Amino acid sequence: MSDNQVDARVDRVVANLQAKGIKICRANNHCVVQTLEQDMDGTCPAFFRSLVSRYTYPQLEIGPLLMFANQGGRSSNDLSVAPFRDPILAQWMKTNRVLQIGRAVSRFYDPICLPLRASNAPSTKDPLCQFNHEAILQEEAEISPVETWNSWIELLEWSECSVVDSELDDSPE
Image 1 (spheres, rainbow, N blue to C red):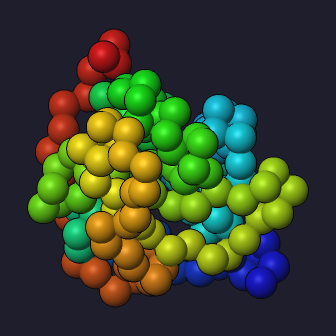
Image 2 (cartoon, rainbow, N blue to C red; image 1 turned 45 degrees about the horizontal axis):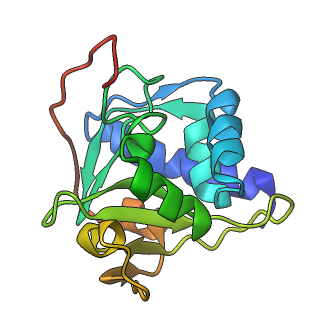
């Protein structure tokens, strides 16, 4: 799938969310994606990369996912802040080449992650995996996903979506 096709699919999803009253704005956020990929030593799936690099959006509840906001680090629930708040979880995710993009609605601390690829291998495959945060913090030897979904972009396309009220602050914790 070409970059243009990826962007067009993301644009359709964004238009659908905007039609539901969700404030998603066009922006040049390429530096956000570059920083995430550098910090996590991998490449984000193409659909997620397209959304984050071209739009700002609030924290969203999408089916089982509380997806972090992308608003320039103005809240503790922002994509550039939240995945790195707990150093043990952040290191586990980096080691296991996954990026936390949110938390589970039903198990609020469990990270929901997308796979990262080697730096030169972008991919449109975007399965979501939920991991048990307690197992990670207790450094269990085998940590398998608690729940998985075939596709993040399909979850956005087919699930009910709403904005999660979260205060913006100028100083992320």
